[in-house]
Amino acid sequence: MKLVKTGGTAVFLGLDLGTSGLRSLLVDDTGKTIGAAEAHYDVSHPKAGWSEQDPQSWINALQATLAELRANHPNEMTALRGLGISGHMHGAVLLDSEGAVLRPCILWNDTRSHAQAAKLDAADKVRALSGNIVFPGFTAPKLMWVAEHEPEIFDRVATVLLPKDYVNFWLTGRMCCDLSDAAGTSWLDVGAQDWSEALLQASGMHRSQMPELTQGSAAIGTISEKRTAELTLPEAVQVAGGAADNAAAACGVGALSEGQGFVSLGTSGVLLAARDSFAPMPASAVHTFCHAVPETWYQMGVILAATDSLNWLSRLLEQEAAELAASLGDSISAPGEVRFLPYLSGERTPHNDAQVRGAFLNLDIASDRVDMTRAVIEGVSFALRDSLEALKSTGADLSRIIAIGGGAQSAYWVELLATVLNLPVDLPDKGEFGAALGAARLAISAVTGKDPREVMTPPAIRTTIMPRTELVAAYGAAWEKYRASYPALRSLK
Image (cartoon, rainbow, N blue to C red):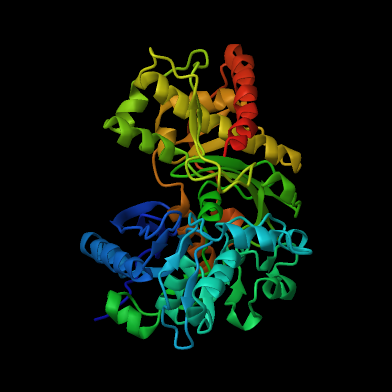
């Protein structure tokens, strides 16, 4: 059964395909939230350093969330006109000539291809063309690993899709990839915004195995009749190209122009700056990617374990992460003596080191869980300071940032981050402003033809947290000690 559109206000769906779950957000044509639904799925770790997922779990989650939205908002769902999707980057979904999935998707946080990444990164012109270091989590080295270790599968690969693009393919039958997601594959010439024959050849791939490139704010097609009937949706719902998760989050907070940016305290940590021009500096380990809107780029420093570090400590101490954070109070004091290096899964910016691992330093017999919690939150914040310095080296200039993600709910952490970065940190009003909203905004632009900058405006700010000026120098000195700890730790491997 298909729904028939009514004459009311048009509504749009933003899907945020995360590592652990899918969030579906229903909004009106102004971006105001109507309703939301979530469904979760598992990540498989069959071997140390491996991280995989069955793409069917994403489809199951999509079906579940849309069913919930139909049940809770039946009238509004009849007015659905467009859908956009944000997705976790770098994943490798391998399809055969019939469009069937050949193996589980290899995810962004899978490090098995570190040797292949190093080999590709050292190849002639790879950094210059891609604008980035080839990190082990990127897509191209994953295919090199498959070629070496699963040749019978590699020989059958007709197309490689990124996670969100597989969902779009399931919905529309079209194999497309937006530029913001394609930029994280090591196959895209990020400056020219096109697949690079040289990069493809360097990793043993062919242009015929690549999906069609598109802008994230452009429509790629409509949901097929088959899927429309399966999902009980109105006819002719258009699908936008969508975006990589951080590009979508930037669309959600209106970070599209030079000087605008955000910090995300999620599973991983991100410090992102929008750029008006292409200004790569691969040696900084800063990612330089195309944005989800035309003629715009963004750069970001990425740390692999942000709230994941606190969650790790929570498991060890058998106490909820929120309770650990609350034990610190709402306001910071001087830096702690215990130091934590948050390299639990290796690190990206600025070290590009998949092999380094985390550590506590300066533990004392009197150290307790409060000291360890403070050290973890400080260590993550110092790692983000590393990213800020790396961004500055490329010419990015942030005078303030918006904070999003679960860690931004901690007043202590936000004040600490403002002080460590020495930047005002804006906290948005309650509401949606992340990747799901960014994906919905891309759908609004794709369907209505509105200029993305008219649609993707910054949120209202609830409060601004200023750096504690009397503590900036102390935290600067503590960061210097933190920064000096990495080479010493690395030498012990």
